[in-house]
Length: 115
Length: 112
Image (cartoon, rainbow over all chains, first blue to last red; front, side, top):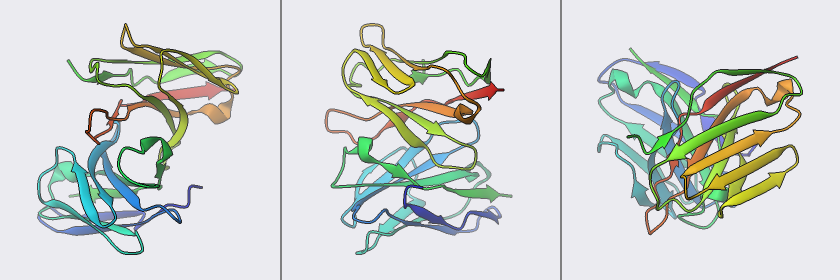
């Protein structure tokens, strides 16, 4: 196990609703990245937070937003859910800043189903 | 043309076989190359990380990079049922961009 935890494990929402997913980083890690992994696809980078600031964003609309807290835990918020948002959402923590993807540890993910 | 091409499989092999997993990429800015293993209902875990062309070996795993052909491979020797998973190639960004790119993954099944 990597020490990165995510909650909830899975959840079901309906179109138009809002959802908050949570991630607890591995001890000592100050950088967290969020990914969306659709079924049968590789992870797609949503954004990265470093020391509570967004640092890099993939091709996702503004209804995907995040927060990183002083203890380096993190949230991913998605507003106005769409059917295509159904996916596994992964967070990954790493030490010391952007670009350190070789030291990135993934959590088990949250499976989101939008009906 | 997609930035990264990876055959989704599934690839089914008998225990003990040598497995070859491959990705092609089009972005010549990719300088680092990674392979992740993802078990069902788990997050990806890093297997191999390499920078240069050539081979890098770690136990039963060998990563091979051919930058001139934009082609990377992961070889698994003496494959075991516990190797059954999805294998993702990944390309950390360079040139000031922090957006990594993943292949779609190849599903590997090693049967006893």
